[in-house]
Image 1 (cartoon, helix red, strand yellow):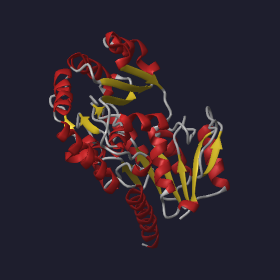
Image 2 (image 1 turned 180 degrees about the vertical axis):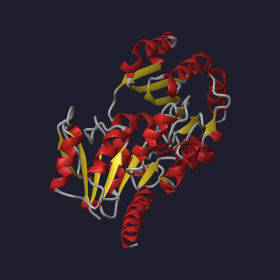
Image 3 (image 1 turned 90 degrees about the horizontal axis):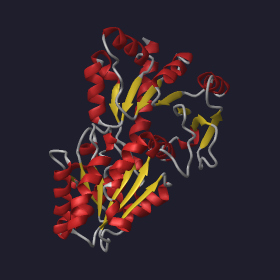
Image 4 (image 1 turned 90 degrees about the vertical axis):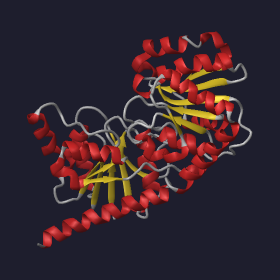
Length: 361
């Protein structure tokens, strides 16, 4: 099936330093049974987009029109539009005869008030289906737009675990965090929890890889400043490529994912499991769907409880290794690219066939 995968504005689909949405789209496209018929539409600007067929358009004003014109030159049989609702709806409506899905990686807005909700519902009716990365997100969409609930589908994020795997044994006394330095990801909880843990365990250290530092730079700096007295036992690195993220998690005994908001289905948790780190998670949003019983959960979600969970894994190496082993095996068998790509291929075929059936009746 000839498929156009259209990334949202700002996505250059870079293979060396991708964002999480690009990683999901790339992984699903690479493992699709129809890979040779997939074309990814994205913004210009990447040095290397890897081995998938891509069409890059100039970003900025008029981007949506440029994508529509590119699609008209090479019409697909199926439109997969990622994340950005307004431009996705415009593209879908420009090709009303082509089945389409809006692929949502976070919660769909319902607007404020009945008029706003009606406008959003009108936009969302442009698509044959809505793909969500967790049951949590799909349920929130169904609650907000019950008339469209039947158009919602869940495809959990995949991970190519072989790219991340490392032995769980022999890890150094390292606690790692890889993610955004923002309140919703629990960066303040991490820094507050690490303070007493590092004080009580001088042989342990923390390795923090932070992205989007500029978003809350002053706030983030204030959080990390509380750990300044530990010197080089706390490493902070910003905007690192995926290879550094992988190497950091592969050397860590414990990985933290204490999202303070309902996290849709973060790749950070799957990556930590895949590398063989023992994961401590908030469990919010889609996090429990990703980790299942293979993580230690922080309830209630506050700094003292997070510190207690870290202390629990430091004091119990057998539990730490058991969580690391089971979590790694879980992602290697459950969240495979082959399984998720097959689910997406089947959904594309189902929606195309549904269009044909409606056309015949």
